[in-house]
Image (cartoon, rainbow, N blue to C red):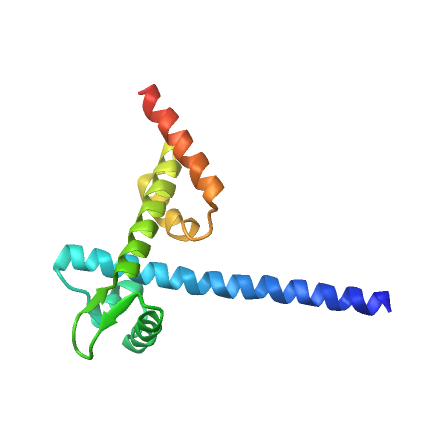
Length: 148
């Protein structure tokens, strides 16, 4: 019987791992959207589906579906054919995401990575880096700035 129990335990662990990855992906998408919406509002005064779709390289339908989910999650508000706005929770998520992105980018640049590559790499890393690692990045950057 222990062989069957081991198989069940391994299957449950594997399922939990896949669930965490799916959840992380959903969070990553939400963070990308709210960060982009915040940037568009800052840059142009508004965020619209067409502009989001263009900048994300996806269809308007994809953006509409994601915006509906973000509304359900309390991150954005919008009305048909109108601009999209961030809620307080969405603004907080956008600010945290931008701060992580900038920290990861600056850390990579401090290691000698070109600004262009660091910007592109930070886009993926920012969503998967732990708080412990971010703390180490901050410490490294603080040391580097004191040396100048």
